[in-house]
Length: 160
Image 1 (cartoon, helix red, strand yellow):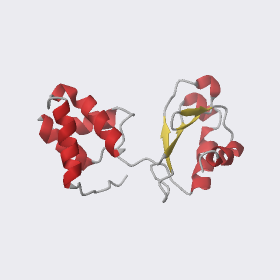
Image 2 (cartoon, one colour):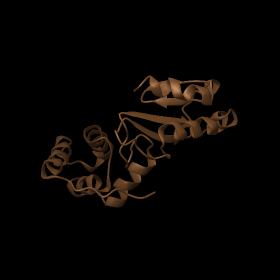
Image 3 (cartoon, helix red, strand yellow):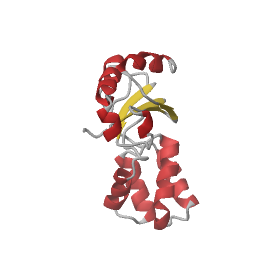
Image 4 (tube, one colour):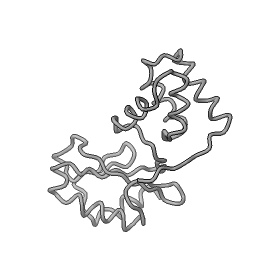
């Protein structure tokens, strides 16, 4: 996966510093700082992580390790309506792969990409804990269960 290089504006750096300061620049508040920064920016690119690292006095490798460990955090921009297809065992066995292929076809995206209008992004995850509803698709916070490839177009239309 290629990384996106961004240029942080002075006001972006100031915002990150303000967020760190609101948590007293305490290294033990790293996860809270990351949450607040992701809430503001929508994602956590390397450049944001570097400012957090410097302000909290935490090695960049540790910040990156936390960001990549927790599935809530993302290093790539998400669309206004992020679509996640569960590929956990129950969902996979019940045809999640075909549902994923249909989303790819309908949106013209690969996993990890965002539509040109930033309306949709596509990702996969391992388990949402709704195995009885497999295959499961999340659009933002909304859960769709027992999704078939034929349902994909109607799901997308709800958000257009």
